Image (spheres, rainbow, N blue to C red):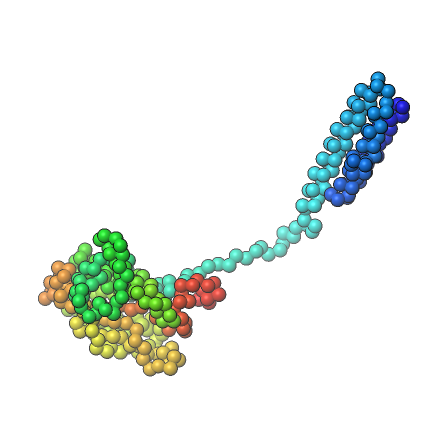
Length: 335
Ligand code: DAH
């Protein structure tokens, strides 16, 4: 029966060779099964140990154990090597290939138009001012000569907030005129780009939030001529040198006289129109100066306000205002 002991070493050598010869992980599993599986040759030999005389069993057990430990080590080593091989790329890396390109973002079309507006006014010496979007009635309406029962207030459907102090969302950037005049002495030359809110249902030309630019110029001896010259300069910068401007009488509670500004150029004619209404403006109402503590006998000024979306839509030929807020990359990457 000592034949069993003699068979251990050759079988171990055969198993080692078969495991090492496996070219990939499935073949390795096959080789393992052939020797160490339940029906494997090594397992089968081990089972014969029970037939050995009692005094020979300890030595045989030791030899089997040593062989098993050695084969397990070979198996683990082969597995590591074949796993590494499976994970390695088939082709050698080509370091001369171009890298992956990342798409660069760009400024939103509304930001681009706002920047262009700001740049045009900066050339005329205007500074950018800012104010809160959550406002009080005084800055949004009352100080602008628009008391609670004033008809002009109906055209602004206002979002009211459940917060003390700033109970509404500003319906126009005109509120910042008041904030600036309250805290600064004339002369004033500011523009105010910013977000405004109105209770409108969204459609192709309306959105409950949109953007405006406010302008305010206060000094001694300011005239409507200054206003017209300034507006003309800026719109030519924005909309092209062929742009014409026209003022139509209008009503705003904070200006007297008040005007609506129409403009005309090739872009407008492309839309099948002669003139498009683009902004409101006028000479600052004496009562507004009184409300902020300026002497209306000494100071005069003009103000205007217009919607940035409308300018951007005309400039780029966009027919639905909602496109600005959806942030669909297919839309945004065109600008
Ligand atoms: N606040 C006006 C609006 O939202 C626009 C406007 C008109 C602003 C006349 C002005 C102005 O400063 O003088 O429709």
